[in-house]
Length: 393
Image (tube, rainbow, N blue to C red):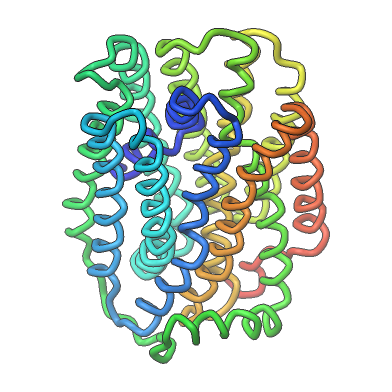
């Protein structure tokens, strides 16, 4: 919960894009920076899989990757306090890229740990409860961050102070994570190098065609991330983006996503993650349709409500479905394969989004995003089965 709270302050589609735009004045730079962050996550899941796939216990590796991820948030904060205008933007790009690298590894190590310590029929509730509680704390912190910290430029750099708060909160989660009681498992893959783990992915997709279809559907649905950094910039073309407005929009997004996550988790425990993924992808796609008609602050708030409902549920359903498509010893490599594809989309998506906005317009970006997500939804509905029916969970 603490980790989610801290990370959300950095990953929210409000504070960081607004910070980057304030420093650069360019939508392309915003997209490029977010693309660099996502690029760090493309190969690192494979490294994570080769690191933990053969281990009987993975807690130590999980703690290490989580700690390195948090140190990059501290770097973002300190850069804001001590670097001049000229060096600040390159430093932010470096820290976000490194954060993405360790985040990609953490996706594999953390989810492997979750698969080993949380029963499949309780994962939805545990994930939903974590996100629900993290959302409530994030909402309160986000409002104060916008209305008080940014408005008053606290400590001389309001954004740096926000990220320092994020680092402190996220670091509290490491202590709780260290108390996890992990049992040894015997369902292991042989020790593999990163290259061997990477070479195993094509065979995994070939031997598991249902997972391969899910792999494609999830990647196409994740093209929603192409538009993510540009929601708040588009809002800036309709109104003035004060610190209070940023705080309100972030708070709305946090509360909506956290509340809905709890419901999505309960639904997943009862009916499986496939139905959750279909529902959340549909709502996310429709939110882009609504965004095309926004003209004022109430409309933007309504968008962040509609977009917040599926945002966490889509990610959680995708991560948890990966755990159920096949044998338990292949969980790390499946997580790496699916995570790398989604992260690749996350890497090229914001860059493409910035180019589309630069050359065409914001509405063109949202229309293209709708088309790609619709393709993923069709594959998911028609060709991806519920994995629990086959495994008997």
